[in-house]
Image 1 (cartoon, rainbow, N blue to C red):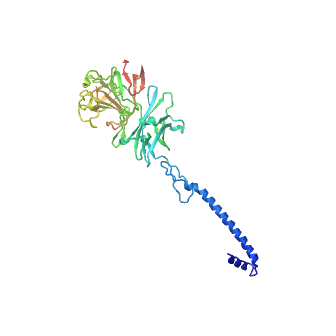
Image 2: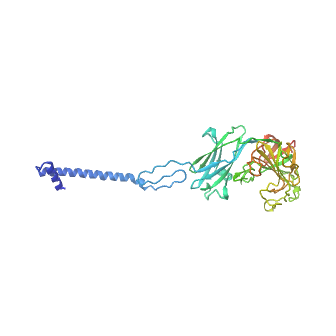
Length: 431
């Protein structure tokens, strides 16, 4: 250092330097160098202290809708744009609102598929008026309600040991939706859905609420004390409501609004021997044309079953797609809608394929053929003349008297649809 300083001094003063002055300059130079070194050390220490918290924080693997990727330059991680939830929402067949009692009902199936790599936990589903934006939901279904509304495909479970309602990665489920609007309230023309999970909100599936025409039909049977068994409802054990099948490569529910009409007395459908079809009040009663129309199908010749439920039921013929409906009449009621009468009494059909019929005309009698555990009339209206291939649609019965199983007075209903467990009287009968 001294030699170098003297050399610099000699060059600076052209060889006429006095060593005292050079030493003084060297001391000044060394002091400044030490000062700079100290400042550099302080600066590095401060920088190290500032960077310690970021370096100590673990890298967090975020799942679902957002991810934070680790960086190699020791800078704070920057969150990437949030992806929408990878939940597909679709409604294969849009609903049509129909009145019954004090309410107007909208019933349909919301299909959910989780396209994400991890399970999603359902917390809530909100249904909104699509024209009102983010206004108050028209209906909200919480996790407890969803437990009875959601049906996983493939027989898989939706709930994990912690009780969360899960749709696994790659899994699909059907949510059976039913919304009851007060008669005086506004019925939205279009509905929008929010599927809320534990960490995200998926929006979509905008549907109409008046998809098909509501036909006004006459009664399919006559007289009093007709129980609308498994009629329109969202009950978890309603086999009509949950009757989704795959036919012609697509999911359909022809039984969505079907009713099993059983005549009852004192809440019983039969007296005496339960194994004898003649013990049932419904057996042999006439079925009527609900509208003017053309007979598309009239099938006879299948025998009645011996009544029985559960393991005691043994069908007279093997149950197949060809025999499940038993003896059947299909009536074209116009507008692309078809009325089905199933489980008819063998030998009772009074019409054949191609016949024209008038509303109120006797078509056949109630039996116990096909997949019938006891005598009853299975009646439904669908969008196809092919058995089970159409979508079930609601309809209105022009006039009937009704009381619910919860009691109360008998009321006259005009242009309504009977709901599940209603006890109905057609014609002038009110008992």
